[in-house]
Image 1 (cartoon, rainbow, N blue to C red):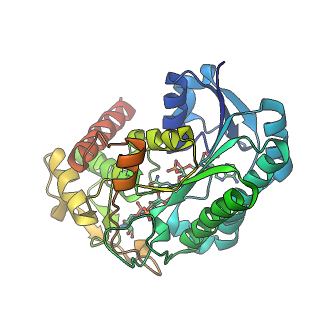
Image 2: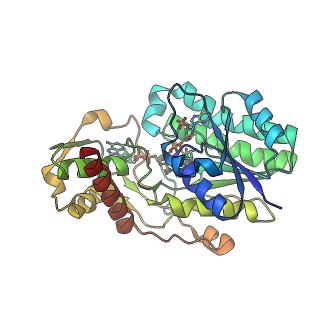
Length: 323
Ligand code: NAP
Ligand code: GDD
């Protein structure tokens, strides 16, 4: 029988890759979208005729219960969130309502409608924040450094708690930064690759950035959605770190991205205080050992291939927009 999955956050970067992946696996895909005065389906336009979109919001539990009752998915992937760290200082309550309490609303809806549903929670390496050990593993203590990180810690523990309290098949993926040509323009990788493309095409001269010393473990989003699915195929629910095991600074990201377009980053990058954060996460690097061993998960794209992919895609995008 064809399996049905519900994805919250299907219009986001990860939602679009996961929907593609599940369709390829033969799933019927239901995607939850929130009401907006303008349609934001760019990332899923190419698969829209193969998926079912339903209206709902993580802020509204009745809508979640209604969707589960009507569509009866076997698996729920909770990817929806206010996901931009910088915004979480300006909108801490909204971030908490969505990224923290939103998880409880989905879990409660599952518990009420069908506790057999398997649940994936999009946890984050931001929970490690001011890191207590290097590299970070599943047992590394959390020390979040932003309202977003704090909200994700809540979402993580409520997932563990509902698993232990009600026996739900609920798993949490502690995913390190993952990027792609579909990444939102405000995140640093895409900001840099899109900025490089605009400079290479003569549309801009400078790129304004914040802390160039921050280090991240950057992987490819297409690889990471496979890990989400693998977690829900296990007999027992469990939490996994998903990462590449390598870390690179924002400065290195700039070097590689500008060089890909034949440019010298130091001639174009300007440090701009507006992009510095009240509290920074200086270094993230994950150890994906458990995911490799128990899920058989491996990444297929390394850092330089990822940056090259993103710069090439943005060069094409910017050139096309210029006609
Ligand atoms: P993203 O591109 O920002 O997508 C977020 C999605 O959440 C969008 O579809 C958005 O809908 C939806 N959303 C926001 N508020 C909502 C609400 N109140 N109700 C329903 N939907 C709502 O994020 P992403 O990069 O794909 O990340 C997916 C998940 O993984 C997020 O939970 C993120 O925090 C987490 N995560 C991401 C990374 C990473 O590096 N990408 C790493 C670890 C964890 P609209 O299109 O309408 O805005
Ligand atoms: N966005 C942004 N813009 N970041 C900048 C800039 C800039 O101009 N200049 C430097 N940075 C630094 C940030 O200070 C941060 O240390 C790093 O680049 C990465 O920033 P983001 O790309 O915004 O990602 P993030 O690490 O804060 O959060 C992302 O990854 C998390 C997983 O660790 C998001 O996708 C989160 O949703 C996710 O949970």
